Image 1: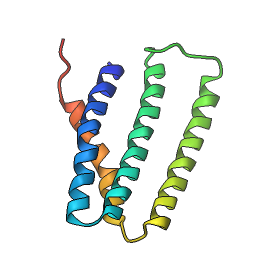
Image 2 (image 1 turned 30 degrees about the horizontal axis):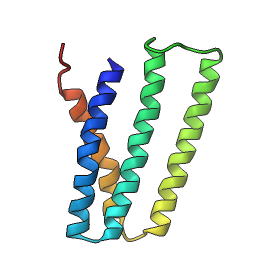
Image 3 (image 1 turned 45 degrees about the vertical axis):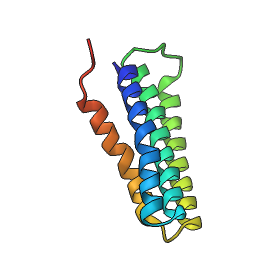
Length: 121
């Protein structure tokens, strides 16, 4: 179930990320497009990381020893990585907050669409 959902999300991202980057490049600038692409990849990678944890929690993947400690450590590392990378993007591209906002919101919209699309059975 999680794998199919992840597959749909990746398909939507493969279409949505280049399309969104092209629109922002045409409408604003290459910097806005870059901020969008970096943020989009960051949020998409975060989802992939979390989906692997959910897959294990649902028993669809083999759990290992020390899962709770690994999960908490993973959440801490994930949060720190998100904050550091977003800080870096906003530091190097300070005027491109629209691209960053779209880069964060885009994958979230695609996540909702991937969940709304029924799986073929």
